[in-house]
Structure formats: C-alpha cells, structure tokens
Length: 313
Ligand code: RIB
Ligand code: CA
Image 1: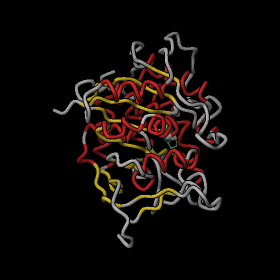
Image 2: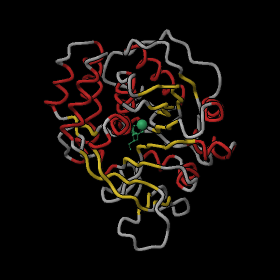
Image 3: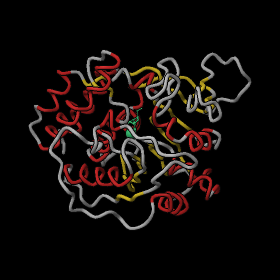
C-alpha cells in the first residue's frame, strides 16, 4: 500500500470538508502533513475557521492547520457565498472551534516542508484557488522540482465554466497563480468539472451517509443537503457534485478515474474568457502535455469508497 505524504490546500466549502474528512479517515494511505487554508469560497477568516470545525467534527483536533493568503496574487478576491452560504459551511449547526490555528503562514509551511522532506516525497492536494501554491513557487522556485505531484480540483473543458461561461471557480479566482502552477513543470493531475459533475451526491447516496448515524455522517449529510441547491437549480442535477473529494479519492483508488495527458494553458488576459483552462484535448498544437486531465470516473465506486471511509470516523 502506498502511503502519501500530503499537504492539503483548501478553501472550505462543503465539498472541501468532505475531502478533508476522507483524508482524515485514511491514515494508512495519507500522512497528512498539514492543511493550508486560502481565501476562495469565503474569506480566509472563514476558511481557516471552517477547517478547524471540520477537524474537530472528525475528532482530529491535533491536525496542523495554517492560514495562507487572504487574496489572489494580483486581483481582488471573488467569493462563492451563493453556493456555500455565508459561513461557507452552511447546512449543519456550526460552532466556534476550540482547536487553535497552527503558528506560521501557510505559504511558509509549504516552502519549509518541501525543503525539509526528501525530494519527490510530498504530494500537494489543492482544493481551492492556487494562490498559496503560486506564491510559494514564485518565492521559492527551488521547491518546484521537489514536489512529487500536484493533484488539483480545478478547470473545465467539455463541461465549460461554473462561475463564468468559460471558467471554473478555483482557476477564475486566481488565474495568475494557476498559470504559474501549470507552467511550473510539476507533475499535475487535474480533476475538472468534466469529471466532478459525474459524482453527484444524490438522495440515496446522502441518505447512506446519514445512515452512518455518526457525528461525521450526519454532519456530512446536512452539509450536502444545503450544498446541492446551487447545482440542482442551475443544472437540474440530481445532487451536489463532490468536486474536491475526487482529489483525495484519486490518491486512495486511482483506478476509479481515467483521463488523458494533454497541454493545459490558462487564460489570464481576456476578460471574456479569464481563468479558462484551455485543454488541447485533441492535440492540435505543438504545446507539450503538462497535465493528466481526468474525464471519467466510476461514480458508484467513488461513493462506496467515501461512505466506507467516513464510517471509520
Ligand atoms: O468550482 C468548484 C470548486 O470551487 C470547488 O473546489 C469548490 O469548493 C470551490 O472551491
Ligand atoms: Ca474548494
């Protein structure tokens, strides 16, 4: 069994929360070095608070959680309360967490960890805008070659955008950071909307989580009861798409997913298509492939994995 050393960079968000719970439920496969929080779905003050709430609900108050960047590298912050609610974790009754934030800035933690750990041993899992990662790579280019791989939720191609007609939210919020990451040469696995819109938390699937009858199961079901509203209203979906848990599920069971190595570049100039992930899916350019762009998933296998793992917490 492969045990991955992982930093999770996140902007909780209900789907981030499920991803974090899945990681915390899988210690045999995931050595979680720490969470770094970023502004995204909601401002940083809320994302770091939400991360602490999630770890306390999971019974893991010893988890290292650091706050990172509170705004994109070169643009004003765009948030998504219309999807996640004012708290970013609307649905269950929330509480003020008692576990403290870990000292130090998230970007410093990313740099220091990659310099300390053996080269090629740390996987970055990004669930939000890439501001912390782009900032770390820009400040300390020496760490880039030390990254084992970066598995991200972000982007879209055939599925087009969810925050604009052209762009997915995580990339749209900080396209300059995304450009740094996609041009860095780090091995990248992308979970775009093309695949995340295929893992829908339908009523039977949410009820199976609620039926765990644990604090985690009920908390997760209540989050998803709220989280689905945006996608059901916009797309007529049968449930909320579990975007971010795809990143963690890929580490646990990669054969649930399939995709294609292609070139992906980021639009950073045009206001019309800002943040678009331009994936050369059909190889019509001579641009080198820089990402495994995932398009297919065994959705039933994904939810079977998720439910069995959350039952452990
Ligand atoms: O577009 C979906 C992504 O944006 C997810 O990561 C969600 O949590 C938000 O960050
Ligand atoms: Ca997220």
